[in-house]
Amino acid sequence: MTFDRNANIPARPPSRPTAHVLALFVLVLGGVGLAALPGAAPAARAQSANLLYLPDLHSSGYTTSPLPAALLGALDTPLDLRAAGVDRAARVAGIEGFGYSVVEVTNPNAFETQVTARLDKRGRNPQTETFGLDAGMSQILRLGALRRIDDGFWNGTLDARDPVGAVVRSDWRSRGDGPSGGTIIYEALTPSRRFLVPMLVRGVDGLYGEYHIMNADEEGGARTNNVRFQFFNADDGGIESEWEDVVEKGGVVNVDSLEFGTSLTRLPSNLPGGDFVGGFHVQAQYPIVMIMKHNEAFEGGVGAAAVRDWDAAVTEQYLPVVRSNYLGDTLIGLINRENSPVDVELRYQGAPDSPNHAGKEVTQRITMAPRSSAAIDLGARGHGTVAAPAITRGSRPNSGFVGSARIASSGRVQGSVLESSRWMTMTRTAAAWNPFTPEDLGETFVVPAARHMSGKRVTQFAIHNPGDAPLNAGISYVAIEGQVGTQAGQVMVPPGETRMLATDGKVDFIARATIASDGPVAVLVYDTPFATLADFDNRDNLLDMSAYRPIRIGEGDLVTPRPPPTIRPTVTSTPTEAPPGETPDPTATATESPDGTPIGWAYMPWSYRSR
Image 1 (spheres, one colour):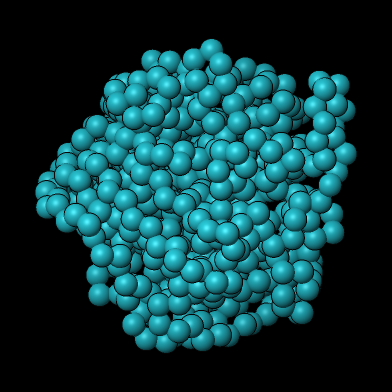
Image 2 (cartoon, rainbow, N blue to C red):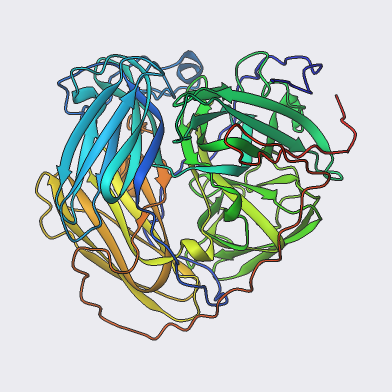
């Protein structure tokens, strides 16, 4: 049975992005810091698995181009920019056409393994690719290099003999083999039945959210999967709207907030101009995987991140990088897992080189209603649903704040981050990523395919130390394409701070990168079109930026040799307090699926409000 309780809300035409000049966005090449935090518990499990899901893949057909190494194609300067006296030879466009996807797979084991990629064009043209993967190595599977892959939207799985890790990278191109600038990167996924989506945007910075769900039910029989969504209001946690998707076995369903008449289009506006930002709860009859994409529908950046499951809601989270009018702005989404109100404290710590609040802390406190979501906007365009923090943004471009943040809450909360920068009338870059929980921290991480100037991209690593003692971190590389040379880097990260390392050198290369540290860290990977600040000043170089979490490697797995530490301090850590016990859903009713497994839909007694 399908239903949509907000069907009486009229569809709203999408709002075009408003012209607004925001600061250009680049990564900080120096350090960013956060005041010393309570010690964080070490990671408990690795991110690799024998079966990984790839819900959103793209191909514009077979090509001999060495994707993504082609350069940006020249296009005309838009009229509104030309009228403003801007002369440039190229521009970005978000998602245009099918684009090209690559799957970057890494083997963390001390022995060779075999991987089978099963690809499917939304129920048509199933394809299988099997390849061997040496111990401690990575391989890039390019859909555009497979002759049997035609243009269209694809999905698939990686079925490995031994646990592997992977990320998906998709590039969109304006014409020919020149990239349009739109790029998304997300981690390959493992399934669950219950999820929290902290943030969907509709019209924010011209970005429109779009979720993708893949049926990950591996049991026998052609079972369809019922997936229910519930959005709760921020006043008292009452149910605001509810809808359901039905996903065929092995199939994918995607819903775009830009399209007319969808459940996302009809969500009641909570921002000026009919825009929306908020989160919702998801429960599936059988296992699924899910990603959230944010696309600048008219011109500009695009971001994507994995949607994390119910158990990723915790009482402590870490954000390695946040910014306000400093090379871009950060939008933080939070959602409350509990059936009771939750108090949340956000501590923003200025980096040593931040124009405002350098080395100082700004504290923000909010209270979230049961099951509700909240958006915190560090920008100036009013996209938050709660009051903004008392951060000084400055009066000139790039004169605001850059630093890190910690989120502490009285109950279990899950977060997500959307970074964006605007230039003239466009959202130039957009990057989506998930904050780190204590369990996400680790001492070894792997980036399957780091880049240096390959396709005009540079990989940068934000290494955050949430502990209370300094630690050492280093990066080593194993070449996949091109000659790496002497690229290993090392940095000491003070307690509670973040440091940036980036690929460097004069030759292009793609390499497997291993980040190793002396204690638990959070590592956020940026894929950028600029190696230095000077590169970013080139307005013709308008490629998008992406951010994602690398593959955490557990104890006993193979890693490339660690750089010898220059200091080896003792890191003391205190485990975080155990989260409160599970709170039952009100008036939950459980029915049985065909295999006897309880479905456990929750029907909420609060009144439904329509606007």
